[in-house]
Image (cartoon, rainbow over all chains, first blue to last red; front, side, top):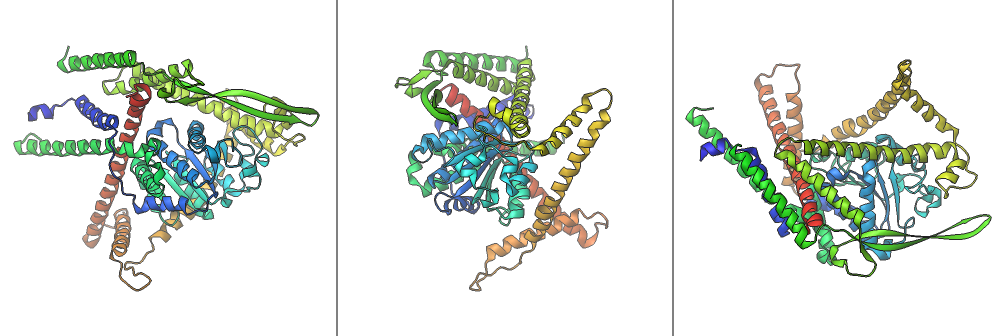
Length: 286
Length: 298
């Protein structure tokens, strides 16, 4: 038996991982989540604002990170919609435009009374601008120097939401969902930290350790990886029980089932690998 | 044929047949859309108001296919199948490197680059440069919403000239000209980054680390969790810094402090790795969710 394990083809491990992820996904297995203090800080940053506040939603990711970040972006959008906030969507990634469109579709389909046909008065899509941190530098000082028009080419002076907005220091909250550079770190370095703009971020697991030192001084809160998204969804459901029956509001929660099973498998394999290693050492093979 | 290869080949064939049968017998993998009429009004100073009507199509769940206004979308169905095929082709790398994977990888890289280029052209070259330098022409050609009589902003000639100089790099002779705009970009980027890093990362992080070992609340009660957390942060930062302090010999007390720093670093790397694993599994579940829900309709 140990000989088989010693020479196990890695493709069997891939197959086990496939089963570990796909079975709970098909079964729709979810587990109860307890929102952490960090996640509750994000929740309160959005929820404690008066209804109809101005929020910039910067979605800096592409389809490659969608599996991890889309639940966060949807949760941010849904939470802002519940509070009837005015939303300014923008992205520093060219592939981020379809990601913004998903959030806009969510607004129009789930909250038609507040947002359907209210482009320019309740939400605006500023689209993509090239220039990475240079764009952030500009929008925090003079929005119209970088974004003279929205995604449709309409002058920002002709859009009610942006007409009197000089820069994003005037907004009440900056919510960023990012998968790398330029993203959360750049928003903190060039946006929130120098100008004290209240900021919350949602980021990938890879980015999370980089962003942790900024909390709580330079960053109000952070959603780290899919676990953060699931906890945030739970916090929103706790705050707004009408969402309990909305399956779209549980995307992150649904993805935590596969996470649990896959983590158990991984830990088991690591333990098994160590047992084999020590057994080999005992036999004088290693 | 090796036994493992035979097993995996059979798995792939049966898996493929299974997928095919699911598609044939359950009629999944079809995309339905609802027609949404859109109306917009536009007016010019000298002409009466004009009304423009068109339709946009919103994707709906398959269960709504019988409802009025809902129709089958061939183009989106083809898109769904192409996406599913590409996902499976990328997954095939786990079986082993193969031409299908290489082809799909190249398609992804090409499509991403092409998409980014088109978006950058329409948002930067057209919207941000062309419309600023030639507003009249831009209004007639692309942006009817632009204010009539908008004046050209000649300041935008500077980035235009710099961009043209940058393209000089492609010329066989005179490629040195491209070094001037490059020098400007590097200098500007370094300047922008330096200030922010100093302010937010360097000074900001030092400020964040200046914290009390012992924490009391407003009523003078000792908060042991906060005190423990602060102590761990301070001890961790100092011991990690000692580990990277190479100008003195790591002997005696310094040796033990630097070893403690190594332990802190190991825990940090472990946490980083765990977060990375979580991220990768989330990406896998995202793709499988697409295959199971959107494509197979399970």
